[in-house]
Each structure stands twice: as C-alpha cells, then as structure tokens.
Length: 566
Image (tube, rainbow, N blue to C red; front, top):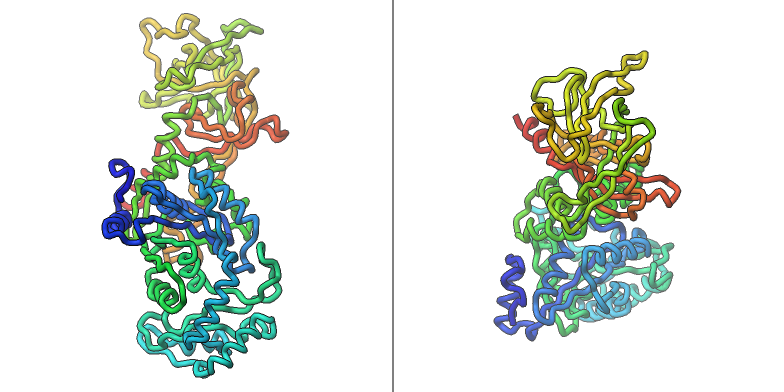
C-alpha cells in the first residue's frame, strides 16, 4: 500500500517511515494517527502544523484514519470552553475527525486497571515523598538518583495504598504512584516517574467528581494510543527523551497494540511566543483582549485577523516537517496570506486619515456613479458602483504642500489622478489657526475620465471616498505583538514582556466606500494602496463598521530588520 497522492503530497522523513512500514506489512498495512491537544487553552499556529501533519497523513494514505483526542487529565486547568474552541479550530482548518472523537478521560477506568497491573507485577509503587524530596532524590544529569524509602513496599501494601488514594483518604501531594524503573538511568524520565497524583476539589468537565486521582501524561499518552489502535504517534521533539518511557509503559502492560512514537521539530515563529503558559499570561494579565486577539498566534486570533484556512495550510506545507529545530520568519506566514488574498480578495477604497477636498469647478449639488473593477486581475469578479461628488476625502499622507519630483502624490499646483475617476489639481490649501491643513481646494479635468490628459504628465494615482456617501468605519491597524524576533529567547531582558511592541495596535477613524456597508462579517478585501483587511463587525450589529488589518501590501518589517542588522 502506498500514498494515494504521491505526486502532490509533501515528502518528509515521517512519510518515508510510513512508506517503509507499509512495504514491510507492519501494522497490517494500517495508517492511523491522532491529534491529542490538552484543553487548557486555545490552539496556536504550532498546533496547526501538527493538525495538518496528522490529518494530512491520514488523508493521503488509503484507508488512513486520524483521531481527535483530548488529553483531559488535568482538571485544574481544563474546561469545556477550550474543548469547543479546539473543535471549532480543527474544523475551520478544513479537517474532520468524523466519528473519531475521543477523550483521555474515557479511559480513566482502564488506566486505573493498568496501574493495578503494574503494581501487581512489581512495576509500580506508592511513594510518600514530598515533591521537594522527589526532586532531591532524582539526582542530576551527572549524578544518579537515590531510591525512595517507599520503593521496597510490598505488592499488597501498594495495592492497599493505591485503593485508599482513589477513595480520597489522602491529601493532595502526600502520595503518588510511581513506576519502578531505574534511579540510575542516564535518562531522567526513567528515574521512577510519577504515574498518578491526587487532585481534590476540582470538577472534571466530563467525569465530574468521580475521581480524585488523575494519571500523568506520560502514562496516559501511550495507553490511549494503544487502546485506539494508533500506528504512528507523531510528537514534537521535546518528547524524544520521553520515548523510552512511552515504550516501557506499553511493554509492561497487557495491551495488543504498540504504536511507534516519532518526533518532529516544533514550529518556532519569530516575533511571537508559542508557549501556552506565556500566551495564558498575556491573556490573564490583560496585555491582549483575549485568546482570539488578532495579535496572537492562536488560530482563533489569526482567523479574526483575516487569515484564511487555506493560507495557514499552505504555510504548514511550506515550512515542512524535519528533525531540526529552526526559527521561521514571520514574513513567510504573511507571504502566504498575501498570495491568497491577492487572488481572491475584492478591492475597495478606504481613507484611513481623511483630509477633505473640494472640487470647485464640479457642479454643486450634483454627482455621478462611476464603475470600478472588483479585481484588476479577475474579470469574473465583476465591478462595483462608486459615487463621485464635489466633496471627497483623500488620505492626509497623499498630500504635501511641497515635495521633490520623487513624490508621486498630490502637491500644491500639481496634478494626480483619482483612482477610477478624474485628474485633479490642487489650487489652494486651507489651514486652521494652528496651521494644520483642514481642506484642499481643487479643480478637475472633465475630459480625463478613462483618458489621459493631453500634453500634461500626471504625478500618480491616489484613492478617495465621497464625503457625502462615504461610510464611517473603525479600522484597527494590527502589527506584530513583539519588537524582537525571539522575545522569549533573549536573556538580556528579564521578561519576554519587555519586548512588547507599543505600536502593535493603532486605531483609525476612516471612511470607506458605501458598498462595504452591506458586506458580511468576516469578509476579506483589499483596501487599495493600504493593505488587506477583514470585516469584523457590520453596521447592522449596532457597533458600526469595524475592519481588522490582516497584513500590509508589502513586508514593511523587512527593511526594519535589515537596518537593525547593520
């Protein structure tokens, strides 16, 4: 059996291992993966890499299957809201687990039975050391650990103590169940790791208060994989040192399936943090507005910012799957969404910093409807109507009283073309008492609609919106949350929070084309000459139009990064 899509499926070392297994007849020719998130927060772009890998492998091999399994063994940090958010994100990315939804808590009774089996075979014991004593007894990377004084307990005593742990007789932290392996092992994970701990006073989202002891991840993970018939358990590199324990657990319990754990490098993305602990800190301390803040690398945040699921899947394909840790430039992710939206996003005009312009030779009280293509490269997207009036708004950045010839926008006495409209000339600048420009008086050439002026050279093209028909909108200009490419990796600062970018969010009170008043929430579009945006709230919702900037038209950070390296 081989891949159904060998010509297009991305090749990597994991697929090569699967191909070899299939050729050898391993696992009876089955390919079965799983995506096992812990519901203690929202998924981020790093999880998207794992989702695309696990579900993608299952999709590309004949009869392949992928489970969605929640590793819900720590009720102190987990809740049903996170469960629902994770399912929404996986579906939005374009993957479906169908009837293969599982929870580690589904196996609590079986996990307990396997723990009993380990006790009966002398492979596990109840330990009464404190957490501090356990760390002290474990030793160091260069020194072996010491055996717990409780390690020599009899099978009968361990069986009794474990039963009393389950019955709730002991307080949190006073007893744990540990595997009896090797306190002198060079692998710290094999020095009698904890299998079960006590957790009182919490309500599990599925099992309620039925349990007061909960299995550790390193015990739950291999057992869950085996019970579900997983063939290839794909994990990130930090679990490589845990693989001997994964195998030890399965080798010492009575289970039919023994999955193969394979590790790959996690995604490290510049100008952000990927640690769930640090993301939680940003949310809890109010640094961001929530898990779906558009500045976060969470899938919910990227979706709200305007990223498409196809752009994220493309990104995951491009970064590939390797064994080597590396850092991916944020520009690569931004390039993927630019390419997608350049092809599919309709165009519109928006003035983010409005400056009023009066065309004095245009008839007062009159107007006309002009036509503009929705996409300059795709005629099938049709055209839209744009009202043109005597008074319009242009962007303040598109005017200078004086400028060199390199400046290709409007200057006093110079001509520019209004996008999809006429050529105009600035004749007079009106200022307030503080010498701030408040209005421009201009004239237009009525013969230049769709035609170039005769004998005159126009400086450039600028966008505009009718002052009468333009719709007010709030435009949120999102930027990178951190000003340093590795905010959690630079030891010069005491905290990653020291690298927060003060300009990660700016808000503009803008005017947009009236056609956008009927756009639906989540609509993607390009504001011509400004960037790509996503409509967050429609005016009908009562909050007015709100647009989030997805990405600029060009990589504005590339120049900044080059300058910082000089």
